[in-house]
Image 1 (cartoon, helix red, strand yellow):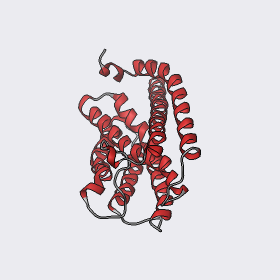
Image 2: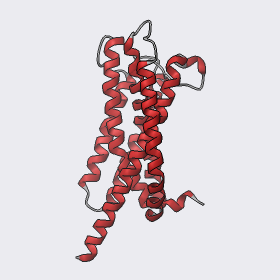
Image 3: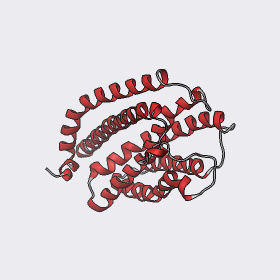
Length: 240
């Protein structure tokens, strides 16, 4: 079975409806277990104290904020090339989730920074690129809402998304591109020497899985809602 078959809204609705109950259970179990483990059963850091546990919120939000934009980039590209409506609607559905996650990453990072850097904000390359990415998220959402014709809105928002993906890339690799700024390197890496200590890494991995599943659940729910709205609009147009 080809993945392109699920570009058909009927098949997408059928498959997502079957998956959602299982995904919700896995999301709740992984997130609750990971957060309890991380916040209540890990020690304070010798240098940062209890503030280090902000990483259990900040890292998943920041990771997903960037990767949701990449997901939007891919689905927007599919729309522009293959004209699959589910792809465009999935990108539209993902944007508000990505915007909230980006804002949460900025706020949690500011709280963490206030204890480790002594300030809530610096015009660091990574922090600045995150702020710009949030502006692109908001602009993408506003552009969808400002255009009545769905296909035209999908075309213009897809182009905007492709332009904004530059800042998503910069957000991901800013620390490596510029050897300056106060933001530390990645907390997660293939190189185990760059990982945080296992006492934090293991619950963080569980929270990361839960956060991804949460995004997937929200994405499916919002995409299903967008498909239903499109159907209602089509039915109303026929009645006229």
